[in-house]
Image 1 (tube, helix red, strand yellow):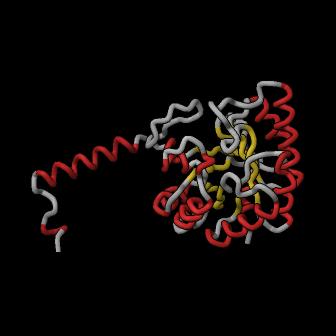
Image 2 (cartoon, one colour):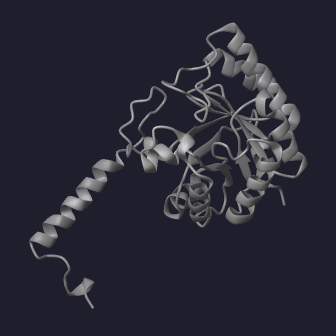
Length: 258
């Protein structure tokens, strides 16, 4: 049987990769038929808990949401973000990565950073932990406003070199977050592994979005977010209908009562 990771690798230069976040069983189950990768991202900190930084997300939170999401995933590759300070050094990283995989039954973990965490990534992969990389904007490291990456030559060179280093150490794909278009294209063309873009142009091998942004549940105004639906409108419509039927004593009828 072809592994899920090999299926992702085989899509390079052949078919775009679809990656979406999910933090619960019901959501994962709904999107699983349409996705190649489901990411349980530490973005849940802002999406679900209204944190102003992903640094506040705990390992326990990631574990609980990941266990729930796992129940709804049958086909997609499941990747779980390792939260802030859970990979401070290689021993701590391995201990936490093993726990994540054991308790959530996910297929891989994602870490943010390049050369600064290279030895940690190498250690995880040597210990048979599948790793997805993440370059460009690193939410766990950002202080202040997010700014796209790759405008300055020095920054461009670092991101490009980091992408090569991550590939050499064995990551199976790399998320490029808010990386300037021509740099994202250059990286994607130069790598043998897939790139997954978010705000990094159509040149990447795949795209990832936070589901709540995609369906219009979040009222975020981030440049790279296109709303493909308006679920909030549908929720309001359904709840308003429920309210009217309850107030009008039309619900529950005998059909909905014991």
